[in-house]
Length: 325
Length: 240
Image: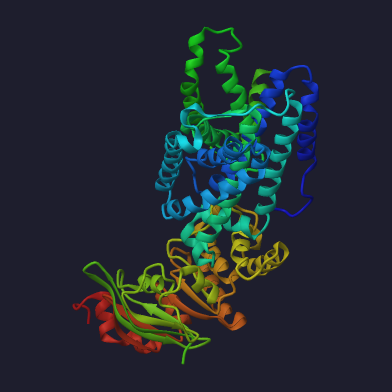
């Protein structure tokens, strides 16, 4: 954790690429749509990674904060015609409130029990928001005519949010908070002996993590113009994919979630479109199966994810090209 | 009036009394050895002082403050550092980052924590492995890292739990030198649990011996070593 320039040259190139990328696809709203989703998953993955990857509190219920963020943008619109754009801030704050309250319960648990506790909390919210029709319009969902037809402004908004979330994690990780998160991840008992108030620092990690997930949720509503509880509190499509983004990209690395987001969004799109219509339709149904295989592969051979085990991947590729000669 | 006083401290695990009315006082600047056969309750006493386990009855006073019911991290911040018998390195962090994480107990800035870490690295002779992952350290290094982490929290009292176990003779001498320097150069009071008699006899000012959770004797090392109840506790009644 050397204290040098905040962003390295390579990182600045990545950010710059992110800035010009939608211009390369200026005439393809389809590609822009994918880029927007990639950025949204960067935010979710980064959020999860702070809590799970750096602090060791593996959440299986990030949909809870995502969904609360989305509904915070949607409900004032539904009832009072208040612009959902306010949700970008309010959604984050509301997710923090919910995250803090859930934390009171789930932080009493450790390891797999914590994971199950978070999973359950997201499921409770999914069912509650689906049933309470007077408040949420139930399973009919909430509809909103989006502000712009063109996708470019949405891209830059979610891109800015993604960069901000990465910056926030980077900032935290080079301060006392970061060292304390890592200590808690490595050994909670040892951390306490070092004078670390583990409860307090787990909450700090949760607050930042749930904030970004909430912002991502609010953005989802603003961009898609429609949510229902099954979509935004989804166990598989949100909570689990968030974990996959983190694991495949690299747990406990700054850029891991970004790489994981690119891989996961493109893979999902590949399956959704049945490899762009080239494969028979049943291929689409195979996505869960392939994601499962992918996770097994990554855990067995690349436990640090693509970013964490980058040196290993380079070595393997290098060896291969040498033997081919 | 010592720096730490245990007053009739008792710990029951269900029907088992692991520690039974143990009382002792550690004077400021002293090295107190805590000895006893396996399972006699030495580590449990440390875990009670740190509040890893709540005390069943009795009280623990540190620098005039009743710490019996304080949280583990609060006790560390008051100035009691400890090492673990089963070492607890932060495995995936470098040795230096391990010590920095500890140094943040008293330092708020990155630069401040790093300065403390550098000092501690040098003091514990770990500077040459500063960038190594803590999980990759051999056992002697891990034991010393335990001491280093505890020192970086700037304690006034240090609890050392078998920091010499598993070391070879030359590593042992180095460990003894470091422990002695902790007292003489840093002025830190020490309670040490140790099975290796060479260590405990060599560095303790006083020894408190326990068996089956009960105090059997307390005194100067040479007196305790000759005490028949201590010999009996360690070697059984047949040895005379």
